[in-house]
Image 1 (spheres, rainbow, N blue to C red):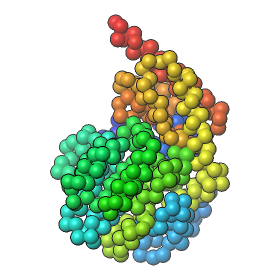
Image 2: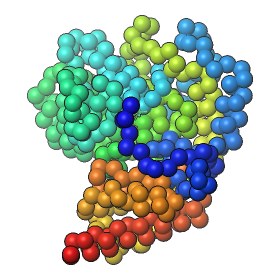
Image 3: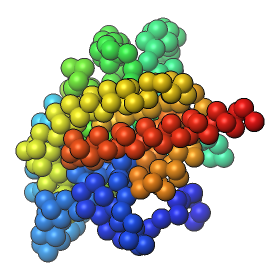
Image 4: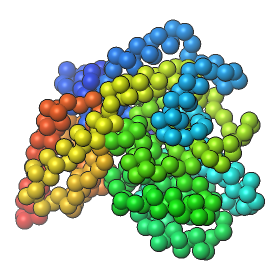
Length: 393
Ligand SMILES: *Cc1c(COP(=O)(O)O)cnc(C)c1O
């Protein structure tokens, strides 16, 4: 079906940070499959894990014990400081599990119509429940009736939440991205997550963090909430977890850890041996190469370099991010930058209309990072110059 507006390029293979097109051209992949290929393309550890596992066992279903799923659950819950874990096959499925968990938690407390607070400008997926939770009318339009039981609040605004708390007894949870990704790489004020934690503790609400994009070392920590020393009740992740093999996970701790019981939720493929073998290889590589720290230092370096190189470009209004989740906001819509970059051999993304988003592989070298900053800064200058000329004529 015609569900995607695609760029005019087809890739045949990749290696490290590069993708190669069928016309032989090489591209610097600075979006990494939308934050998925954090170890770059064709990483040998992942390739080995997948090929070896495919020769043994791809799938058995969750009717039986799965040793690799157990191992991955242990590794992942330890990395996140959580207790239990459910596996699906995507970010949306991880969030579906979280939303179902919150509702069941509410019913167990005697709340007949449990509601989940969700944020303006958020993104949680494209299934009916997750698009209803998403704070973007474009994603919802045409798909009404939406799933009920969500209360919308402004992002990075604690006061609005205290107001809701006073007036709505049905709320049982907050679902929020620690850094909004699709919404324009929005980093909330320092202390926001701790204040959310306090509010949830005071009200008996579950704090549910969507780390589908910010998780798996991209933000400079294994999970972005660890940068703020906050442990949620529920944490969802996906994207980079298996470097491109579909997998999603919903982690829980405290009272949330034991809400779902046999019969409450499931997934045929979820946590299959192949995806788990890939994810284990990813986690081992990220740990041994200390990629969380690497993302943190490289990200700060890149933001500084962009700030220097774009200091005199009036159109640039903000350079922000955490680790290698980077956003450069312009004062005008700039979707053209994507094809300008493509023509120059760089794969980037523009989100929320006017924010250039970079989610490069975490394995990038210093030299490659410097090259990326110079190239993208040059393109933004070129775009700004054209914009000024167009405005004047
Ligand atoms: C990408 C994303 C999702 C959806 O993940 P899918 O794997 O596309 O279903 C959910 N939440 C956030 C924050 C995302 O970035």
